[in-house]
Image (cartoon, rainbow, N blue to C red):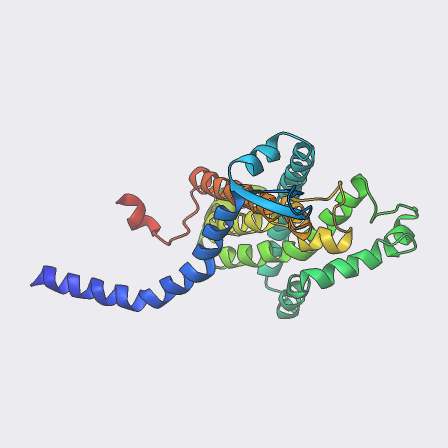
Length: 304
């Protein structure tokens, strides 16, 4: 009886989940499979000797993937890969430090705390394209940045300053995201823990590193993971702020877009597949190393 009941409950649960699974298969599964299939299609353009017309011939092979790591486009790929990685590492590191500092400030009880929390949401709520246009105006040759710094740097051209401009804009926009998730982690820490630490004579820094940071670690790890996955597929901010196909800020996403805009769909699909695998590997390693509990197993699940 009990086994029949479990089977009935399982079938009913599967029936309830089937619409969601079907939607996910259509929205996520089909594009992934389609892009993977397209990435193996190699297209060659040539002249038909019979008609004298330009024709495209397509065959299946690994030439698109081979061209990523060798040939004329290899240097462009590694440049985009390096830019994507450095944007992610530097941006997420700075955003984590600023976000935790913002969370600690917002966690304190003071007058106007609600207004501060609401104002922190403003940069994160602004669409990225609008944010890029805003910072493009700030980084103009006669803009606010040069006026404040008393310099004449051409921020939106090629060079390290363009990379720095994108990094600054990205940190300004997404640090509040980590700050809000870190704040959620701080709010679940019992106040009695801090009172006991104060009685034991623990100082502010010792309390932060021994109590606050370890107890807020689950929420902080999830925040950093989500932000890292978002940074790895960065496209709109460097595209709007600096421009398309700029060597200093070209990412894997912008490089794939550039290939697709030039009707090289097989190559673009190959770049997108490599980016997908890169993100999947980073997420897997991050979860394994830091132990992010993304499925809510809790203590009981870990014991099992």
